[in-house]
Length: 225
Image (cartoon, rainbow, N blue to C red; front, side, top):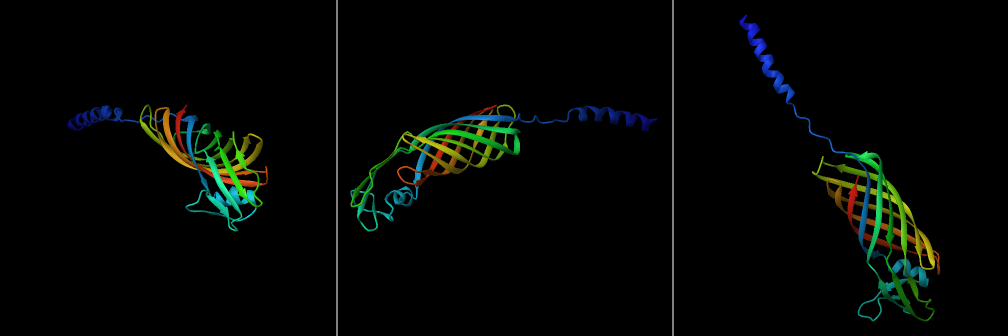
């Protein structure tokens, strides 16, 4: 009898404890992220592309001169009058399988201002001055997104790496480009901030076939749902 009473009391105490097992809430999956982008764009290997492409000769940088570059035969002097670094853009990322915790596939499209470039050439055999103005890039790419989101208004994180292609429209010029981009950021609820770095290889055919490499470092303000 005592054994039966002890068993009943043990089961009665265990039942409330089992009922109090805590299951943490799962973060809600996100399917779309929209952002406004603030870019600081740096050129890379500018002497080789586009300067050597435009003059058709090897180019070297100068020191303590009124001009920044010259051809190695010293016949053509090159002055970069403008390379606008600060630009803006808009982008949207779509996660077909949802983004919550772990890795998923995503597609990002963006519309970005490109740097204004103005170059003056002087000397024997120098080409006409070059200008690239009103440039806008329309990019589309896909890649992997890794997230550790939190439920509600908790602090979450995200990182990504993508690659893709783009089309360039500018005043009097059209072109194409390829790019890779990586970055990450933090989020609180649906709002977040990201930092990203993109390497974009831009190609144009006018006035001659030429290219240039841009590296925008981007700060994004995001909203996801």
